[in-house]
Length: 78
Image 1: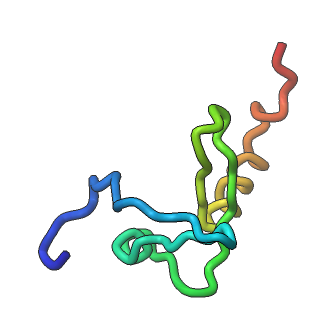
Image 2 (image 1 turned 60 degrees about the horizontal axis):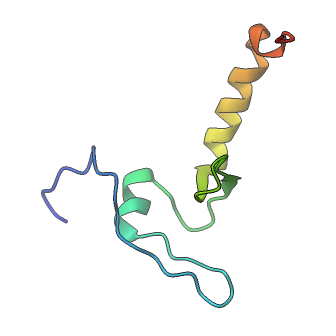
């Protein structure tokens, strides 16, 4: 929507799962997140089993790199 600030927008509508298990990501969400044709998304099931999260693969690379550099992450907890 032209002229609308979507920085704090959380809801982008409702999608329907097709018989092949496919969904369409709303155009406004793709535009706001810079998701383009051919981009790869990492799929993670939520711990509460309420759904799933999609993260751009390039962002996952950044997250993993951050974990690799965090020595405290690898210390045994107990």
